[in-house]
Image (cartoon, rainbow, N blue to C red; front, top):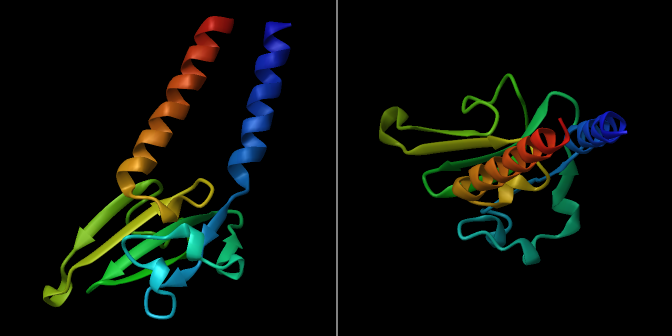
Length: 129
């Protein structure tokens, strides 16, 4: 019985992880999209579904913030990571993540959420097996 419950939990998690939404906006046209981010002021038209092999992305270039969907291949930060660069002396920060509306939270909160989920799954598996 424990194995069946564990299998059902894994199947449910796979479905949950594979579909999620991302913010798709920029701070030039929507001030609430900048930093600090105000999710309550983002219209629902600026929330999009991420497809297969896509991640949520947040980029900040010279103070202009863009939140959108990117392919996992084109995200220079890697999945669930951030990368800072300064080409031509212009600060560029890019973060990518793969959970629901994750490009609307600071990178530290993304890592905390991921760590919490991994700990919970580890505890469940340890308890059941």
